Image (cartoon, rainbow, N blue to C red; front, side, top):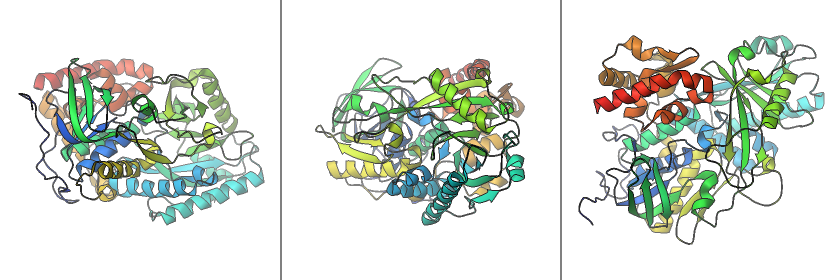
Length: 535
C-alpha cells in the first residue's frame, strides 16, 4: 500500500450486520463530491447512483460489507429522476400477463409506503373518467382490472388505510374531484388508489444518505474509466485526478448505459416523455386522471397533480436507437400526442404554450426478442460478466429494493464474501416514521414532506451554517418556486451537491421548469457560497 493510501475501515467486522433496526446508527458520513480521501480497497464497489445503485449501497453496507458507491455525474442523474413519481402496484403488468412482476411490484410498493419511506410517499387517488370515448365493455374491463389490482394489494398485505379499495363514482362525484373534466357525455368514473412519491430524486438522495449513515462512502462526480470484478479505475471529475480501487466484488447499476461498461449486456431502451403544466391549466384537480388513449384498451395518459403547484402529463413509449444521451430530450410529436389525448378528456383544449416544461427518461428494458417496447417485460435480471462484474438491469423504480437485494446476493455468492442477511425489507430510510408521527411534527409542511423527521435537522443545519433568520431560510426562493434556502444549504452540506445543477436539477426539481430555474439560480449560488464559507 502506497504512502497516504488507505483501506476503508468500518467499526464492524465483515459479516456483522451492524446495529439492529431501530438501534442508533453510527455517526453519519456525508455524501461527498469527488474522490479526495477515497479508499484504495473495499469489499464492494457500486457503479451508478440511481435508485438501484443507491439501494445496492444501502443493502451491502447493512450486511457488514465495506462499500464505495460512485457516479460519474450525480445522485439520480439518469433514469431515476425522470419517472412519473409513482410507486406502481403492477396493474399494467398484470394486464399483460406478467403476474410475477405485478406481484413483486405490489409487495415492494407496500414496503416502501409502510416501512422504508412513508415520509416520501402518499396515496394518490386515480380517476378513470367514463366518457363517450369509453364503451361499456371497456369500462367493465377497466373495472375488473382495478379489482384485480386490489387483490394484488391484499396479496401484498398492504393495509387498506394506506391504499383504499377502488369504487365507482357518479358523474357528479367525478366532476367534484376533477372539475376540469369535459362534462358532455360523462357518465361517471372509476376511482382507485396507487402510491405517489414526493420526488423520485429525493428518494434516491435519501437512500444514499441512509447508506452513508451506516458507513458507505458515497461519491458523486467520480467517473469509472474501466472495471473488472476486482478493480475499478476512477477519475475525479472535479480535479481530474485518477485512482484505482481494488474490490472483492463490483456491481454495475448503470441502467441503460450498462452495455458501455460490460459488453455482454444487451438492452432495448425506450423513451418516456412527460409534460409539466401549471396547476391553473387544469384547475381544481384533486385526483390523478387516467385519460384513455383512443383506440387502445389498456393504455392511458396520466395527469398527475404535484405538491408544488404543477401537473405532470405522461407518458409516451418510444423505442430509442443509436447512442444514448446523458439527458434525453422529448420530441415535438410526443408533446403533441400527450396534449391531444388529455384535451379529449378535459373541457379545455390544451395548447403548446401551456407546457412550461418537459422531460424524458430512458427505460432500461431487457431485450428478449421481438415486440414493441411497450410490451417488453419490466422484470429485472442479474448478470455476471466474464471479468466478474455483476450487473443489475431491467426492472422499475418501485422494485429497486428487491433488485438491490438480488444484486448483492449475486455479488456475495460470486466473490465468496462473508456477509449478513439482507435487512432492507424492514429498514426505514433516514427521516422515516409512522404517518401519525409525521403529521404531529411542527416543522414546515414542505420540509416534513421531503425530509420527514429530519426536517428539524435541515433547518438547524441552515441556521448554523448561515446565521440567517428562519424567515429568510424558509421563504420561497421566487414566485412559483416553493424551494427554500434551508433545503439548498442542506443539499450542499449533507447531500453532496457540488454546483447549481446538482441543487436545482436533482436535490430539488426546480429545473423541470426552465423559467423557474432561472429565478432560483441566485439562491442556489448563495447556498453554495454559505456552505463553502462555513467549511
